[in-house]
Length: 194
Image (cartoon, rainbow, N blue to C red; front, side):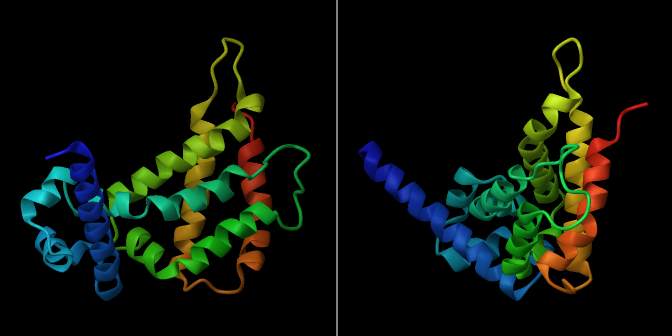
């Protein structure tokens, strides 16, 4: 079989399985979805599933790549420097929470109590990579490296705030919540190591 035809079939299978998972997440918790559920809904063989994914959590991370890319685009626009407004609201942070609110059901399924630790870790790592360049100039050490733990700390704080907001039912507006946490996020990013 020509490679191009195989690639098209592979893309169709992946799209079908990702769509099936997203539809299933609308009906039940991620932890209750099996490979058989996905393959049955996508009308593909179990062996096809394992050609592309290791398990349902791997599929979830892949299925949410576009959504996570949108979140990370907003996250990478955050500017947490000494001249950042400590009061008020960051439009980029508001965009982060507006994105989360728009995809609330899916984020609740992925980041909630019955979500996936691997998906959370995947997102946290990607957020850290996204935020690191914003902190790198300030955190560069004399030997040319950066303090990656600061980027991980800020990413963890932001992801924790997102999870908490979801857990509480997303009270208020994205702008109001962003306004409330912005000074704390800036303070965390500006803290100097002892």
